[in-house]
Length: 411
Image 1 (spheres, helix red, strand yellow):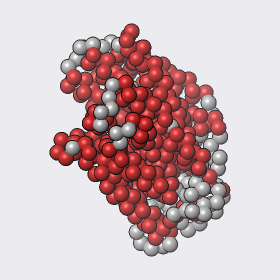
Image 2: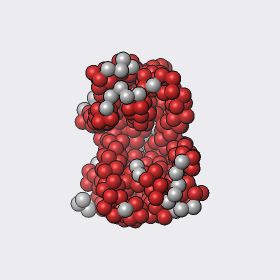
Image 3: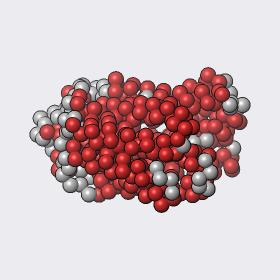
């Protein structure tokens, strides 16, 4: 499990810098399986809050409880609260005992969703905001702890696999729940998830200490590459802009190609579970090819995927490309998170990585709609592919900045 001791013959820039030091702190050892399981539970619980938004939004609108514009405002309020929770953890870095983090945030989320079950606008607003804060804080802390370890890439891949698995289960059982109980049924499901999060605190918990959130480094290496980390953040955000600009409108693209109804339903039903193949592939590969090279390969595949999708009229090809939209992002994400942990010793960029992805996805959703209206769905894929090429350039630039800094060249 410890990637730090694996040969990195195909490494870019600073990838080879992780092999020579002897761990000095407990946070520099590879996590034990039970500790990894705890991080997977926490990250899955945090992601579940975001994944269930379309479910309760559709249930409330379908039941005619509130106007669509008001329900959209509730969804936006939860997303904003998640961002506040993430950046709150990034900005304030006290020493935390993860056991108490799980108990406090799990119970806070359960209480908020219990109040949301009342169904009035004030209760819904309070419940979505507080639940969003808890989910964002949980995501940031789990990502930050996982990214600070020598085996960060594999830990983050497992966390992503767990989140996709839980999301798939929720999406599978949600139709039956909403049919009987409506939106309160979804909130009740989130109450259970929060309680299970609190109960999982009985598992062994790794230490979370901002001062020790540092990866193994060779003597003399720069401790923090702020410029490289910021460049990587912009590059990865652009990846999410491109991906979400297409994935948000996949139904529209399918309609243009004559793919709709049951066929489109089948595409969407397998897209999320199949996306788990991305982090599974990343977990198997580890850092045999370093960190930067797998990101480049994944983005090249994503660029081809994006450019081809609006022209794929054959149903099997369209289905495969639809799965690839999330698969290739899921493949590269753990490598990016591990790089943040290496480039930024404080762990702030790693903790903020979920918010970086959310920001990119938000921009992409709006940009995709504008491109479809002005240039048509056929042009959307090509423009998104060009955005991926630009993001690859930024990530290569981050690799160069890191390499120059390690050689003693001013960044």
